[in-house]
Each structure stands twice: as structure tokens, then as C-alpha cells.
Length: 70
Image 1: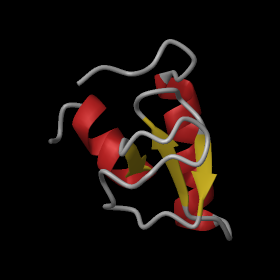
Image 2: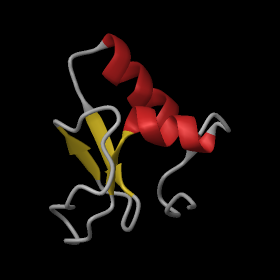
Image 3: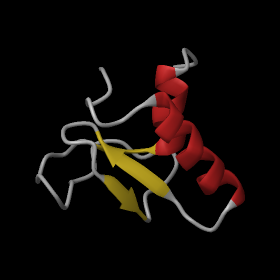
Image 4: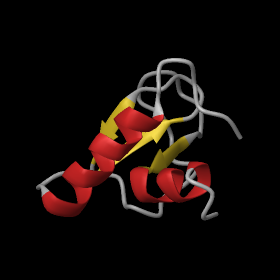
């Protein structure tokens, strides 16, 4: 799995901080990079409202995968 071209580790880190310490629950589509709200931290394979692919994952799950923890 690789990050979409419009999604960086910096964006994931910012979204992770917002999810952990803020009031949002963020996820991203691995097909198109679209950001989604109301996504559980460990979610994977949810439907993307933008492209229709079943590629939306929670930011905590994604960060663990791409930071080498998964």
C-alpha cells in the first residue's frame, strides 16, 4: 500500500493530532486521497464519497501502517 500523491506523512500527522486531541475523527481514501470525517480510527475499506472506491481508512490505522508500526 502506498499513499496517494496528494497525501503526505505531514498531512497524516496533522490529522492524527486532530483526531487524538481535537473533536474530529478523520479518515482518508487510499484511492483518491480525499479526507473524510466520522471515520473510526482503526477503520479500513469504507466507501469513499468522492470516488466510490472502498478504500477509506482511519487516520490512526494509516499512520501506524506508514510509520512502520503496522
